[in-house]
Each structure stands twice: as structure tokens, then as C-alpha cells.
Image 1 (spheres, one colour):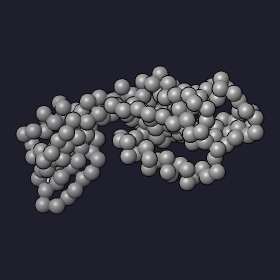
Image 2 (cartoon, helix red, strand yellow):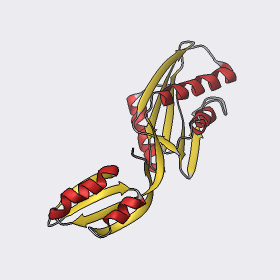
Image 3 (cartoon, helix red, strand yellow):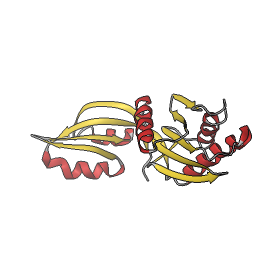
Length: 193
């Protein structure tokens, strides 16, 4: 499985129509609606906002009033062809007055999606653990060393240190004797190194 690190934008003009491809990393269905609303606010008066998304256990698409199967499915096919998950690709079209026909639309939406994916930093994904851990301040340096191959999402300093982390199962095993694990859940995380 692969995903992307950051949002990217790619723009192309085909027969006077402007196509703007935007790829965004997502984690849930809720992220899709939020991002679509932001894009529609930012790119007002576009003719179409076609999209496809692929999550680990879900996928979907919209042709947004383009002829059936000429936009959403081609976008999704390119996402799946690149073995990507947890991504949303929106292709915005400003109609330029020249009809492209079904084949032309499929090529335009596919090529815009390929163009935006080519700009991305692709990352491998693995099954890991998201956890909340607590430990005394005296162990912080040692804990930070162990977490060098993980992601620290948040640090909270009160009587003790609390970190929200995303790590491999091996790192959690290395931490067990040093920290209190408050909560943990299996999660797909970026493979580091």
C-alpha cells in the first residue's frame, strides 16, 4: 500500500478547457466532504468538480454532471493503478467552449490525475499502532531516542509527559517497560526509513 505526504496541484489546458487536479491525503469519509467544500469555495464558478477517493476499505467517485463514466471512474482507475490509498483526487474543470466527447473527457481526467500524482511524494504504508503513552520527565530523552523511527503527533506536559505516537509494533514492545500505555489502536501508518 502507498499514499502521499502532502496536497499537490496540477493544471493543464485542453481545447480551451482548464483542468485543475488536486490530490489530498485523507483518513476518513468525513475528510472528503470537508475538502470538497473548501475546494468549491476556493475555485468558484467551475463547471465541474469531479472526484474519486480511495480509503483502505472504501472507495467512491463522482462525475459531477459530466457524461456518465467519463470523469470519476477514470480518476479512480489512475488512483488504483498507482496502488494509492487514503487519497482524494478532485479535478476541477472550467469549460472552454469546445466539447471533448467521451474519449476526450476520459483522457483529460485521466491525464490530469496522472499529472497531479506525478508531483507527489509517495510513501509506503504499514500496519502500526497509534498510542497514548505517559512517562516521567526523567525518561524523556530515552523515550525520544526509542521514538526516532516513529511519529510523535502531540506532546502534553503536566505532572508527567504524555505523547500521542504512531509507531510500529516493535517500537511499542520496546516501550512497554518504560511507559504507561494509556490507549492503543491498530492503524495504517507511514513506513519511515
